[in-house]
Image: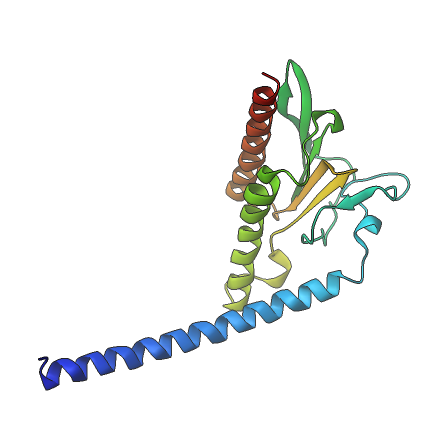
Length: 201
């Protein structure tokens, strides 16, 4: 049988642990409230009315929609033309994806013929969760006072008839984060092509 000292130590540990969990729950509730406020705010702007970054000409067609509730882009580039454009992925000897670099954002354009579906698991189980993770990380830092509210990571995935056509990411020019984001998108495109090739065998 445990001694009195052991029981008292266990009681103190459990009380301390309870306080830690209660504080964690309060923090999670504040975080959820911030996310709910953000979603409510965005719900007033229909996704098919959001003009993509750097877009010129008329608004997107009715068929241009977001696949899910992603964070819509809040800030546009300081200039219409990108600082530079790079080929992101080549399929069967032909470029099918490009990345446009802006001072505080990147836009990945994907050729519709590549067929990268917005409901593919590489989007729903890989890209979206990881980009959402980055957004959640910033929300926590904002909540803790470690990051300005206007420096929050956000992203927007646009599809046309169910095919991903653009991935817009506001990263405020954070070089390491941008490199990581582009790497994730390139990996998803690579795996998608491998999957397509496997299906055609």
